[in-house]
Image (tube, rainbow, N blue to C red; front, side, top):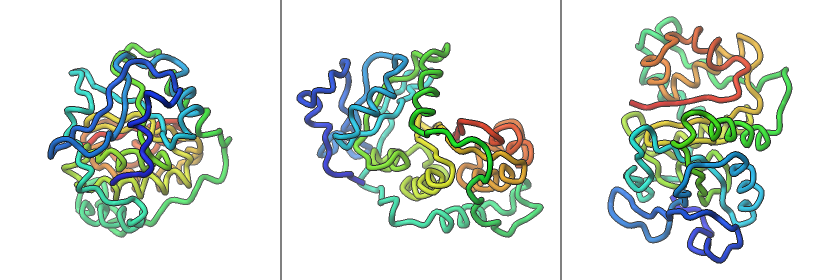
Length: 262
């Protein structure tokens, strides 16, 4: 999926005053006809996400932290696949999640209620934070953490944060879904209901900030069912096991959600 206009080819004359970096056009099928993303060649510094969010948005570019992982695997080695990626707007979030739920309904985690429960409503209580301010603060926390050298500042041509994975043809969830735009339709829905921002993207991992998290056990439990449909591996292969524990420990009033696909 291409998002036009793409300002990445003119970064050198954009006036953004970027550090040295890499324009990535490498895909699973060879070079793409235009860059898919830019990322810095040095670890991210505190304040960089917030700064680029402000300065690059007028160019149609959105910031994201790129995670090279412990092996230093950067996007040129991710086998991106924009040619086989559709548009998030072509898909309905609830239909996507219902399909995934039904595919996994015989799993022990969902066995107690195999009927698709529907989308969880937006939280009714709690403090609603500015999602971009919060994302910048959390980006700084990652930059200042012991794992800080794993993260580099990136820019992606996308109209909204939820579309970032589709805009680069990301294949992280390949064993779960081979068209990431379908998952981006879910991210759009979460962006609307929970004020998420796609904050970090790795080879097969995704972290989002959450400006409006669930504040009651009931809200968190309903959302856990969506997370199970979206990324079963996050729940059935990583502790805490079970939807109730996952909801309590990973979703209730939490400002980040992390996903990992096997």
